[in-house]
Picture: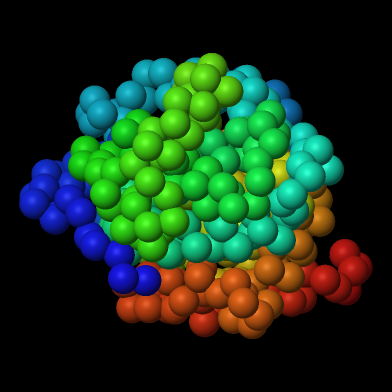
Length: 335
């Protein structure tokens, strides 16, 4: 894309921060469990398990935080309260799933093109994964409140990424970076004016949970390793491009992505009691959304919007895009 890569001078800091992030999430690659961790014993004194009074011995609910008891960055004392707060707050980040009907000059296809392009920009700039999810969240919340002409839609995306970088990154792009990657379609003045408009429209509210924070927790519940991490994030990024996924809360979409990734890797339906307990979603609840995600996976390499597929079809991401989608999920429950 001809983008200049910024932030190379802080590579050592970024690596140091990635270690901290891994500790916070209890593992790398989006919050999976650390390799070599001991098997988790059953949950004790975490939450009332009355609904699991008759848990099958072959699939107990396990305590996914016990191995982090001595890791202060994992905040095991209040991690459950933290995610309970995220669940209460996630509804504030939702937008109407039909907000595009209020736009007069743009549509959902244009949004998809924008998000697909921003995923490539995000990848080339080597930004943190949470930056991408916040970028998309800002775009949708802004467009739900503000009418935009089509020639300014790319400007909205660039400014959303700039704001997300300021919130999440150590090193942020300078205005000239954004002018450059837009092929000088916008001036410095236009970018700064859009930044002010977006912040005021959103009332400076940047602190809302995206699907990323739930992905970290749910992957830890799945006792994830690198393949599951990569496949799950491949699927959830496919969802970012799709306008119709806005009807799902971030936690639900994250759970469905992890469930679909497990089915893809294991070749069978797989949703443990531990995953159900920590996500608060059953397999039956996730199935319809999971089938939608399988459909996105099946068409990921075709058409014009292949940014996510090309990103995850590399050794860096374990060629996750090449894994077979679990098409058997389309079969009836009795099959």
